[in-house]
Structures are given as C-alpha cells and as structure tokens.
Image 1 (cartoon, chains in turn purple, red):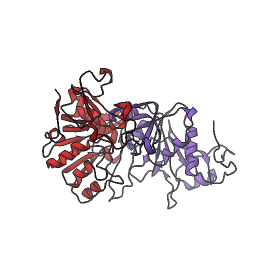
Image 2 (tube, helix red, strand yellow):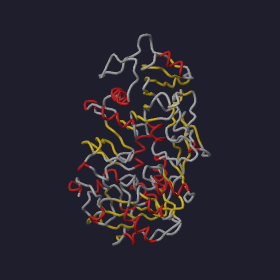
Image 3 (tube, chains in turn purple, yellow):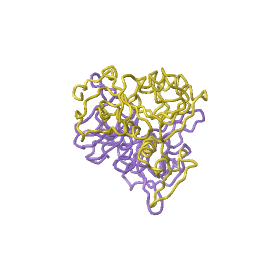
Image 4 (cartoon, one colour):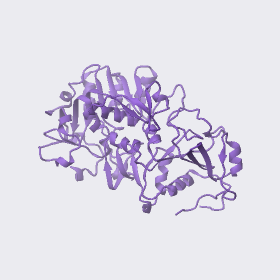
Length: 234
Length: 234
C-alpha cells in the first residue's frame, strides 16, 4: 500500500481497511449488505469485534465454503456463513431490540445520498416502476450508536451524494455520524446549534476543491492535515 | 394442549380461504417448505401472508404466489434476485403489498402475541413508510405508532418438539418462528424430530408448548441438503 499516493482517490479496499481500523476494539458491529461486508476482511482478531446479523445471530464468522455450507446458517444477505466460538442465536424481535435499543456500537451501511444533517437515503431510488424493499435498513439507521456510511462521493453524472437535502426517499433522519468516500472522510456532528459536517481527510482533491464541489458549508481540517492514503493504523 | 398429526396435509387443515397466515423463515432458512407444499395441494386461496420475504426461486412461498393463492403479502423485503414469481404477480396487479421495516414487522408480531394494543417505535419516523401514521415526541425523540399483526394461523419450522409441544430451533432458522408462534390463533409447527417429555432441558426451551397447537414431525426428509454439523445438534 502506497503512502505517497495522497493525490489518488481511495479504492473500495482502501475504504474497507480504513473503516475497519476506525472501529474501536471490543465493539459490537453490524455490516450492511454489499460494500460494507468487505470491512470484515480487514478486522483484526485482536480488535475482538463481534459481528451481528439481523436475521438473528451475534458472533458471525466468515462466509462458509464447501462442506461448511449450512442452509440454516446464513447472513442478512442470505449468504451461508460460519459461527465463531461464543456465538448466540435469537429470534427476530430480540435481534431488532438489539438494534433499536441502542446496543450496537456501530453499523456500516451503503447509501444513495446522505444529507449534511445526517439524513440517510439508502433503501429506494423512488423510481415509479421499482418494487420497494426495505428489510432492516430503517431499524439499523436509527438504532446503532454510530452509523457509518461507505459510498462514492459523486454519482455517475458527477453530482455529489452528500447533499443539503436528500432527494431520494429517506431511510432515517439525522442518523449518520461518518461518511467514508473515495474522496475523503466526513464527520457529522449534531451540535447545540444544529448539525455540522467536518472533513477529516481528503483524497484525490484538496480540501478546498472538495468544499467547492459541495452545496453546504464544510468545515475543513486544520492546515497541512491533508492526509495521505491510509497505512495500517493502531 | 399440543396435538400431533402424521402428515403435513392434516397439519394445515386449519388454514381456510381468506385466512391471514404468518409464515416463518428468513429467505429459505426456517421456511416450513413441507407445510407450504401441503397448503398448495389443499387449494386454499385468498390468503394474506405475513413473512419477511415474498418467496425465493421455485420453492415454498414463491409457489403459493405463482399459483395466485396469495391476495396480499405483508413483508419487509419482497424484491430479490430470484423473487421472479412475486415480481410478476406484483407487476400484473395480482397481489397487494404492505411493506413494513423488518424490526417493525417482528415487533408488531410480538405485540400481537404479548397483548400490546399498539406501540411507539423510532423506526421509520420521517420516512414514506410512516406516512399517515400517528407520531409522538417522547423525551426529545420522535416515534411512530404501530399496531399488532395477528394471524389466524402461524406455519413455522422448528428443529425438535417434545410431547408437550416445547420447541427447539436451529441456528438462523429460528428467525420469526418464536414470535409468530405467539401471534396466531392457531400455531402449526413442522419439526425434524419429536422426542419424549423430559428430553429437552426446561432451561433450554425456546418456545414453550402453550404457544403450540399442532405439530407434525417430518423426520430426516425435512433436513436441509447440506448439514454437516447435524451430528452435534441431534
């Protein structure tokens, strides 16, 4: 992994590594379907992170292969998985009490859009012919102590996906605390005077260039803290 | 008092045309395939089905929908890569959909079984799935009023039943089983094995027999195709 590469954007693998390194040791974590699942590849054993899957399990292990595949041991994406020692199973009402009751430390989700107030839109594009499906997205969004989002900063048409107000149907209000993107990490705080967004680090563009592309006030990091692509962190 | 019957056909005789059926399972895990096959065979129609998904591939609930036996589905995640029978019925206007966030689905079932009149939940507040619902601010947080979902019949799958109707489940196949068992006027369970009273440690019972009306033990035929760890759990 290059450390001189500060003008490059972060790859999906870089992002997964960065999120994994930012999860506090001993945390209980739910990783959403898709890109967030990749974070588990970079969690170190000594972090002692326990993974929750909303279909009713704590202590989920890696994906199962070959003879280990068991139709009755799957994750939220319906992929066969394994169990770690110390795992537990519980029914759906208990599984969602774990989320809604604020017992999960972190959940990591994908998103279509996040607003500067931390509103999340990740369950529906709102297309009139689409068949809607929500699953556990709304419960996760409002339930975990910290909601991290992983996504690209810009849509294919170049418009930013962190916006003043979401135009896609909402999943939850004021729930996102951090956004990990290919161009940088954004911290959202719900302060006394309302929400604020701070750029923690920039990649592939300068902080000022990023601020110029976004249509809400962005607090920039202190001078000279334009961080290089991440190395292994402690 | 729990009744034991020999066949899946006898077990589903309590389902009538127009019944609301709570159908266990998350994906295919925990879905009572043999009970559903018997229901299909019985010709019962006009059903309202409450389940997490709306069928996968060409098995179970997907076939009930394909044969147009289901008038309405109440679920959290109908759209999947292999939900082609639901997709077709929905686009043809042959099936009604009530989309419910997964945790609200579980809690509405739990409320029905626990005698709760309605409850305030933060999940879905401010989203289109809460439109038209009563809301309340409690200690600075916003909640949506949700009502119980009761079934005429619950069809669920467990691993083991003793002669008193006490149930054990297996891994993530537990999912909706324990809550649905409490929420229906009549609960029907398919199990792999029936054991004498005293074979299950009372401390380990997941669903007490008071919730269980009809059980059919389907034996080894009802085992999933890949289950290498079965010996440990027999």
